[in-house]
Image 1 (tube, rainbow, N blue to C red):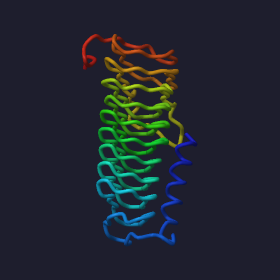
Image 2: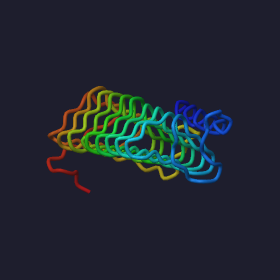
Image 3: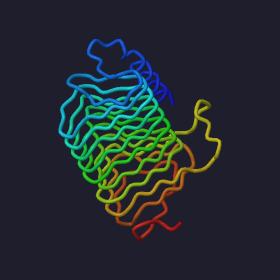
Length: 233
């Protein structure tokens, strides 16, 4: 899973070096409100006000909250969550130990990525790249993703009019990401969901597919069809 390791290292290095940036406005140990331009910090969360337009916002130990209808060029942290408010936009969103949530109508132009955290996309949210988590749940409701959904140990739950253009990939665990529980991830593709592209499973999963869902070719798993809103169990 070298891709995830690279993402984690890049995020860590970028955040650690941010305190030397000329336009840094965040205090070292306090939660701050993002100012014009880039806002960067070390120990503290960053808040972008509703409707504000900002540059890159990043921290090391803290969360990033992007207000409703706000926009940023990037949102990065290492140990913290990222929340993109309703109808807000960001070019990219990355964390290592934290979750990412896109509220209704939020839009991220590139991929959203985490290592240890969940990824949650609400009604009308859009991602222009992939949606990737190693160990966290991926949950989408009426969302659109131009890339693929990718995980190693996390469950996947797709509902509403969700549309995935790039398929699904569940990778085989490597020595760097040992799955101590040995539990097969649960993948649910609910009614009304459309997954274009290949669905490829490199490890055992429990794959549930609604009779009212549309999916591409499946490799490495046998779909269990269900007729209701949710699968049994």
